[in-house]
Length: 417
Image (cartoon, rainbow, N blue to C red; front, side):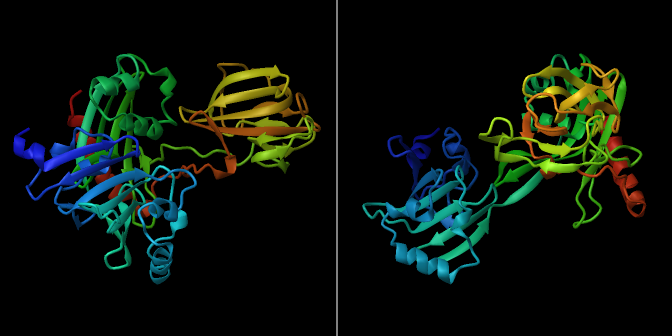
């Protein structure tokens, strides 16, 4: 780096204050001169002439992150911004931003005039990666803005030597792309059983924010070769009001729906809750499942295709079965009176198959099944899981889909590993 560039970008890490400041003079400086710092990613992604469309040459800029429980007054109080001024601005620009939307961990910036004058002229809060809100104290105005966003079409290919993650790492590919592929193909490929020699090709869009790569935007098309079979996936969104999804060469969805409940006839006796009075232990504790009350012996059904990973008894759950449906989703069924025939670890089950019968084994006061839903290793509320419907492409969009699919498939087939 030349001496002129060194003097044009002075970085000061104020560790005791917990923020990062940089000063820019009138000389032109390229954005790459800021790349040495990872403390303030936003400074790497924008021109040094402006930040958030504000000229920066006369300012020192402090970047912080919102802490848990902080409000706007907390962020600005130490900088001498009068609370009455803030209140007045918010009343005049009610539709611009509601400060109750401040999220812990989001970044904000303060534009402080150079010299001894410490009151900021601007406060900018980043709502997300793209959108932000500006409090302009020079004009007592609040307005919103957005960073420049574009998408770059890219492709990648690889051969599995050990694991999907290691393959991406060795090929210097974004690990997020690997996660996207595992989600897309989750219903047709068991990613716990990848084999040496499995391979993939993928066409995707990379998101570019203010001229800086910001991860994978969307996979457009991919083929995953597993156990000698090729599985294709193509993204298709028929119109702006219809959500997009992934389909195969025959326009069938790659996803499958879950049954709404593990019993055909039942009533919900207890829902998923962060705090519930346990009927046996008589103390409040999380209830991370949904209880379906039904007579002893009522058949319990697998809500989706999968592989049994556990079928055993323990003191709390009684007789229970756990099923891994794919690399993302698993379900668990507790308090069974008994297991159905053939239900043991390693057994394959189909959606709607009987896996056991309602009982009250373990810590239970009456016959029911406690149904638990796992996503990426964490228990979630089954009623809040958004699983896209497994419907094929609508016939009225079929010709458009076939045209897009054929183009992407030809491109994928021409790629080399």
